[in-house]
Length: 417
Ligand code: ADP
Ligand code: ASP
Ligand code: MG
Image 1 (cartoon, helix red, strand yellow):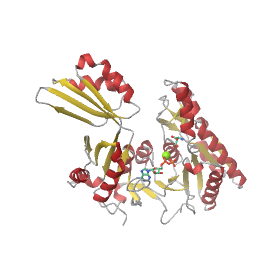
Image 2 (tube, helix red, strand yellow):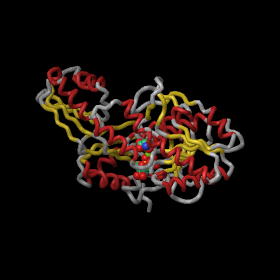
Image 3 (cartoon, helix red, strand yellow):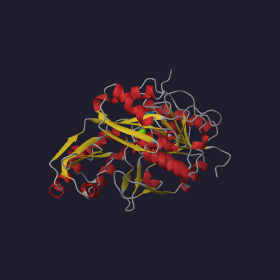
Image 4 (cartoon, helix red, strand yellow):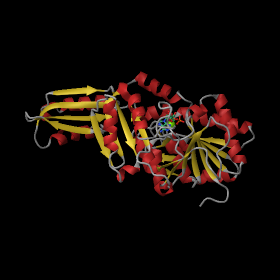
């Protein structure tokens, strides 16, 4: 159980530690939180742009590089910022030390490039915190069963922070970023987006999984399972996070903490989509298995699916994957062409998936029809549709992404007026 001293994990994203001046500002903020009487553990991302640069180096050498070496390369960005922040804190008179993932240790499985967390032993970190030291842990990285460095997938520092918060039984995990909270949609594309004081784990999980990258999807699932209170807030506005009273950012909470329930809570979009149509397949039982079985064996994640059968006895199977999986999906489908007997394979990666999310959909009809009507009024053609209990997603041409999100934001009454 947390003791009388509040225990806070503070995580700083790439822009927040983007250069030396920003790192100094972060150190000031950490010091303020500590001076306010909290025990603090810090998690950092790499400087903005650094991970992309490191990934670029690997790609430049080989398309099919060794994932274990990729991890040891891309994990270095966080090692730099953790050391720099420890020095910046020491300059302010705060006792601080950096930790790489393997030093904690943050144990993961061996799925290099997208490893899953296994266990974190927080005892050593807690011991140091009790002695007044601020641990600065490199996010995004861990150590696999064979002792090699792993990374947790892009955006993975959020997951490191939540996992560390669970391991040290923190009172809260504060995710500092370049926006001041979670909004009804990406505030960078909709100026009328509204900041949410609270959002449920379930809705945030769904929004993150369909493209709202403000939190990594896995971090939200982990927070939900472990009961970690997560706050998203800005590292660019002044003042420390308050320990008590009203918090400045957005809180991710259980459903029973939400007073005002809305039909639609948020809208997200993802450009990381590709559409594949396998056309004119002689219709017979087993076609779906013959197509999706090999795709799954090839580790291709399939998302939306629609099948349409013509009067001539042939059928078309259309579905989506991520852009990264597209080349693998194409080669897999080409290898089963004789077995499936399709006539044509057509692909399109100039598409965007737009999703509306809200727990209110469970009990109220009409969300999907509002979506379809709004898009049709703007003459935006819907290519594929999929739904879940609290989400409706549509695939449209990429050029309509912003227009569609803005129109839907207005149609569901989410605009900040
Ligand atoms: P960091 O580097 O701090 O981890 P990210 O770039 O990963 O930051 O996430 C923050 C970004 O998420 C914001 O700049 C914003 O453009 C984007 N974003 C997408 N959807 C939302 C949303 N619903 N609310 C807030 N931010 C969002
Ligand atoms: N630096 C890593 C990335 O860019 C992890 C993170 O920022 O969360 O994906
Ligand atoms: Mg992020």
